[in-house]
Length: 202
Ligand code: OGA
Ligand code: MN
Image (tube, rainbow, N blue to C red; front, side, top):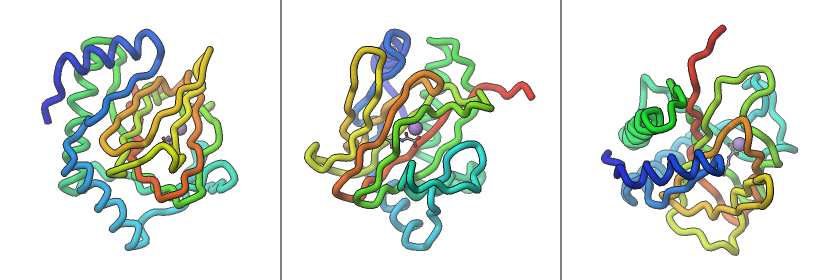
């Protein structure tokens, strides 16, 4: 999956300057459609589970977040997941070259927010654990109008930035710094949340 050099250069500059960046059409529409179909099929098969917060994957806290998730298994990726994984791999290497972030691994899950579900304001880096460096979200809904809600709201030092979760849009932000939330949507909202991690010292 070729990611254009000028695009990555722009993303790297934005990350460096403001701690976040966005790319539309990060993957081709057929790949996004295949990922959405894969996510929905797994949900229908009962493979998505109520999401958890904090490091323990055992706690469920529906008051904080209302999505259902399924972690990607690197050893058993579907065809659609492989396209995602390899694009993120290329992105990781290119960002490392430009920003010296030392990103080493990726963890990712599908997230399905039923209508009305959101995710309260939070940061992604766990308090007791600092391996998550860069957060990413790739949106999978083919069409999304802003009156459907479901925006990702970034709380930046001096402003708020709302991002419409349109299929193919990828957003990246620094996991330790940027607080964010998911506003409730009137329709089902699909995405892949991914975190690039650096080497764990323990
Ligand atoms: C998360 C998250 C944002 C989104 O999963 O931690 O903040 O837009 N997701 O789905
Ligand atoms: Mn988050």
